[in-house]
Length: 141
Length: 124
Image (cartoon, rainbow over all chains, first blue to last red; front, side):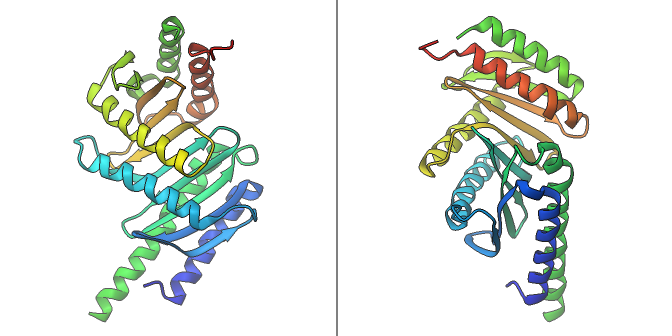
């Protein structure tokens, strides 16, 4: 369960994302694996329905992860990125317990900035939240 | 389909990415390889299926079709799927060896342009 401290950590991480992507950020949402309801969501373009986006990205990521799991190639790693015709780009940062979905406009933010800065910082943020969760769970038990 | 353009495109892709390119296959919708460099048919067939699932998900969500997809693997490699009307271009890249600047600014835009030229629209 996401407790207030973790929500603060998520808010801080989303502010970093907003700084990294600037005007290129359209919407972003973190949800738990298996539940596409956003724990924390920012939508900067009103027309975007982040519930639908979370569901779409969850289906896409789950299908990919399942196909990889049954193969001998490798498992799904830290992220998956989809560039659509036009300027929109969806990407998912994948973690054992959480998924962080982002929609960006790549005419306003470079792909390099997303790959070099945004995604690594998002991976680290989710890892820190997970570590905090694990520490608290161990402490409680 | 212009196979000559596909072969030249593969050569350019290989030249741009150098040793970081582990395998690369341009495959038809049946998952069979049309043009390859260090072909890995098993990977090509798997990601061709993943690409087909992805296209179906995108269509169901009423989103514009995908131009390309990047999938990071736990092994550390990066899979890049480029889409054309009649095929997918599937490449496995060593994430630690690749120059991301070259990949993003040079190799990717050129490959997408070449792929579109190899499959001209019927009206063209």
